[in-house]
Amino acid sequence: MDSQPTLLILITDEPGIISDIPLDPPLRKTNQGHASVYFELSTDFNYSHSFDSCKLDYRNGNLILSRIDWYGLFKNKSTGEAYREFLVKYNEACEECIPIRKSQTKNRPPWFNRKVERMVKTKRDLWHSCRRTNWRNLELVCEYKRVRNELRKQIRHK
Image (cartoon, rainbow, N blue to C red; front, top):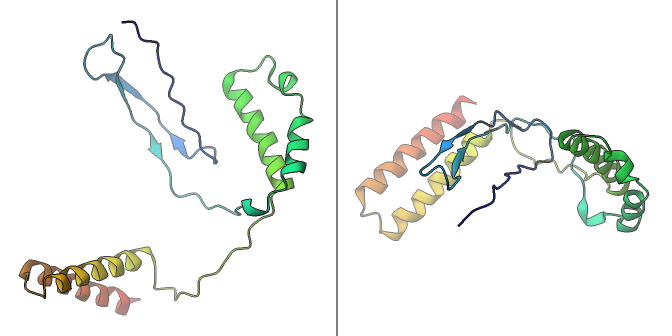
């Protein structure tokens, strides 16, 4: 049975968020085409704004996108160039038709960062686990106390 090659497409809303996409040799038989794909995903992007998609102006967006001569825009361009042109037009339409969401500031103290937040969740989960066992599982109790004490140290150092 002949199989057609498959194209892997990674689509993101931020250019440059995915980089270094090497394709490793096939996993088993070369005629099956299974290969390992690795990519680096950067999560350090600061989004300057986010759109409030609940308030999208569909009619105006549809009108803007329908007025674009897509054939003329993509003519004689490579796939990558056409995709970049599409993103430019798409982002222009989004900026015009979707209001920017007002940022909600969290009233959190500066020391309450992601690490502390994860530790609080871990401590809470361990507390529930210990409670389910009536505090009889000594491993869980010791782990709970260790996380609790580490959390206290983290908070006091801030």
